[in-house]
Amino acid sequence: MDWYVFVFTTQKFSGELKENDEGYLKWIPDTDLESLPLWPSDHIFFPWLREEKFFSAKFLYEGSVYLRHKVTFYP
Image 1 (cartoon, rainbow, N blue to C red):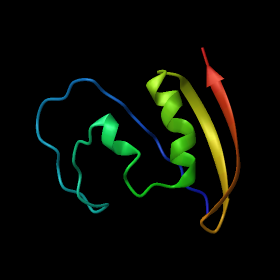
Image 2 (cartoon, rainbow, N blue to C red):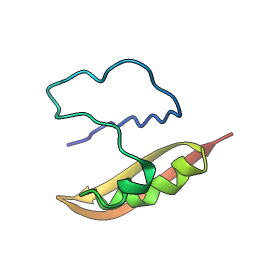
Image 3 (cartoon, one colour):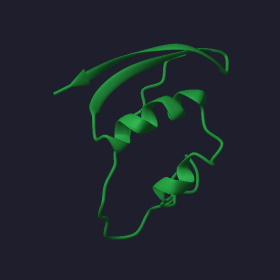
């Protein structure tokens, strides 16, 4: 099964978060992210977000076991 995930970051937000079928949404401080139950690949791409790099990546898993990834960075 393939999943496509889009990650967006922001420094400002106005309005209210809306409930949806995927779970409870809330803003999390960057300093708390790594303490959440995360997939192994999340720890790989978090630094790229902090460096504000634009990228696409494919993370290969076998079941829930991380195997490898391939990333392309864009200017």
